[in-house]
Length: 446
Image (cartoon, rainbow, N blue to C red):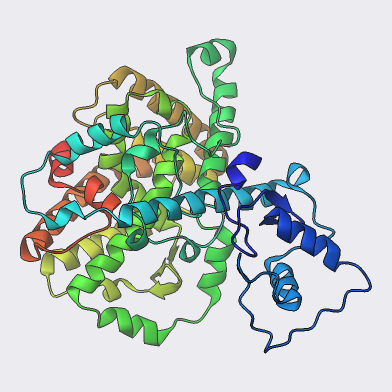
């Protein structure tokens, strides 16, 4: 992990870092400076206006501003070093490593022309995915979302050239999922069904928690008064701007969905083609499931980034788009009304993603086996937490009955997207959004 950290420049001056020192990723120079600054005889003064630039070139010109920057970043003599950090501190540093890798890739991709501006004949989206998968197998996996905090703090798709294929390359990832138990035939032979359920429940609950905004943050936002000026802003937003804004927010969510999928025990053992197909056809469906936990039923609004919006804020002049928005809200609210626990939502996402009846999948037997495990685990969890809704109808029955609705919404989204692209041929979407929701994806869904 120390070697991974060193790719991040010193947070104080930008020089090459050597690890975490006094709680912050710094170079040896700033580490030594901060240690010396803790002497009781030190009394630095700024000769200017206490706003000096502290970088690799100027770091020695003003000791006062350099020390203030160290303190502002969180450096402390009491801070433990990396090897003895708490789990929360380690996770924060791991996030910084992944985020910096994303920024580095963004800088590299910014130099490449956007292929979407060319109208020449290109391979299908699926072909491109497969080509990238093989061509970039040695790339390290990045998680561009921020699984441990609020989504506004992550880099947006506008600043990132996203390579979806990299998210399927598990063996070279710098991010080692915690407790990522791979459930295989040997494991099954050594454990009872109950043991397998317990492992799966624990693993998926952690994966869900690590790839979603914290529930405490969501509830805190629900308690805040609605910002009428921002609601009005979205209601007055033009169709093109609204499409881009929604595409960016959806892309941020799907980045975390991809990371969640990688943490599903056994998912990375499926063929590359099946992993890609399941994510291309299932990511929009999982986004609706995740949207349900962002719904405030008492106010009939959704937490959209950092603002609570009613469904009317997403309406355009296009009737089919209004119908799609209304249907998405209706479905997300119907899931929220079931009052699932976070663990149940995690298991439900696994169930939806691994639904074995998707066309063109090759490893039907393996997918069916993983699906059966998720089904057994969610049955156990729901039976422990929920009474039947009415008669013999259970919460699980209600959830399974929504699967066809997800498929219908996916197709409606593709139809609306293709119509929009025909009317706005020069419109450029985020890279990951383009890859997942290409015309080829629509053919896979049908």
